[in-house]
Amino acid sequence: MTEKTLRVLIADDIASNRTIVAAFLAELDCTPLFASDGLEAVDVFRREMPDVVLMDLMMPRMDGFEAIRQIRSIAGDHWVPIIILSALSGEVDIVHGLDIGADDYLAKPLSFPVFSARFRALRRLLEMQRRLSSSLEQVRAVANGVIDGIVSADVEGNILSVNRAMCKIFGYSASEMLGQNLRTLMPKRYAEAHDGYLHRYLETGEKRVIGQIRELEAVRKDGTVFPIELGVSDLHLPNRRMFIGVIRDVSEARRIQRKLADDAARLQRYHDESEREQALAMNIMERQIRSDWLHDKAVQYAVMPARNFSGDVVAVARSADNALYAMLADATGHGLAAAVSVLPALGAFYRGAARNVPLEVLVTELNDLLCGLLPPGHFVASALVRLDGSRPEGQIWVGGVPDVLLVDDGGQVRQCFISRQLPLGILPSAQAGVACEALHWDAPGQLVLCSDGLTEAENADRRPFGRAGLENVLNVTPRADRLKGLRQALNRHLAGQSAADDVSVLVLDCGVEAGH
Image (cartoon, rainbow, N blue to C red; front, side, top):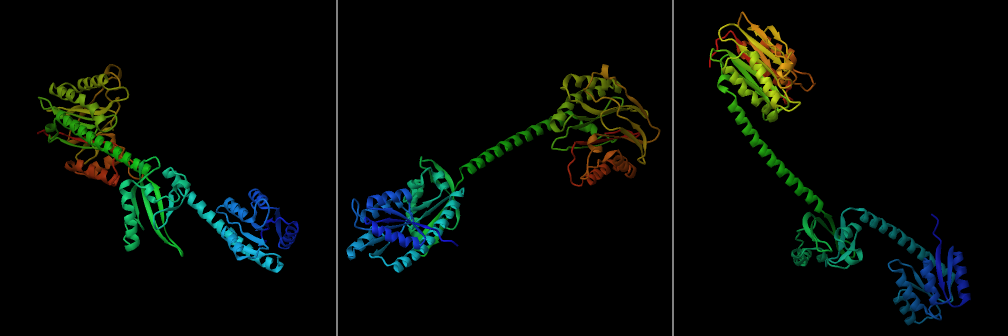
């Protein structure tokens, strides 16, 4: 590798001496810079920042001793070799020159072999310094690039070095922190105990912070106390012992944690309030539904909510002459909001059954009531049935829910009542028209009503349960177990998944004498 050409300042008031030294330097591939006295030497050094200084001691205007002092002050931490070239041979002058900052001494007249040997050694030292400086710069660059604060301190707790992040975290400049004790960065309650802890650790090895990460508090320059995470390492060097601290400002992390905790608490309060409201709504809904009539021997039903609260509603009533009225309703949406849409219709349904009105009249009353109450875009898909109490006949109306099936005891479909009507609450009855279908049977059977939550329930492969799934269950399940069979088949189809919509099923016996 090619050696770096050294720039060498020659300070001597005798021109012939400067010429001789310049000739020596040319042989050693060095570039000379000249000064004829100490004052000029200081000026050239400040301006050119040479690699080496060769300094005569006895010069006019400013002697070499003073020039050495000023050059050392200008160079600061950057080491520039200063070699005294002087005819003075007294020990006092040599020692004095070395004491004020010179690194070596060569007596005049100069011997080229000695001069050359000294310069080769000097080159090696300068190259070592260059590599060391480069390594230190890399270490400093890495330290300054770290987002956490890094601080080193001696065994007394005095700060030796800080990185850029440390200054940013605490609000001090590096010069303000260097030499200060670590107590400066601590709240009073920590600072008072710090020295005792440090001395106890040095004497006994008892650890409280060293070798682990702890959350503590620190103090910025402006007096602000803030949380930090602190990790401290004990570093043993050949000629000294020091501590390295890594500091992370966790103020923002703790703020986010507090906000998340507050948000979680608000969500919990909201959830609890929602649970209370749903429980109240469910209680009100249950009070509106005549559950005693749902226990009629001619009735089987199931309502399976997709969430905590079902928006599907089934209702059954008996008139004075034993006619069976039934309604399966599926309102827009899910849960409480959907159930509220159906709630006004329940009272009207029970009142109509008590009056034993024809099914067409009951549907008209329910539709017009909901048209006046529901906001645009909300409606109630439903199926309504009236089975005569003394003859094997009745009426059925289907609007918006899956087709209603009449099956025999073997589960074969004998009649399908297609959903042709608009759901309740979309158009007034005068515009929509209300058309009920007549229902007759000559052998015992069952009417099967369901919401689209059953037929549209998808498994993991996005395959719906469908009409075919419903009919398959009816075909293979005994009359008394069809509702149970539908539940089991749906659970197998979903395979542990939740249904996307509320599921409701209503099975009515045809030809079986009703009872409570």
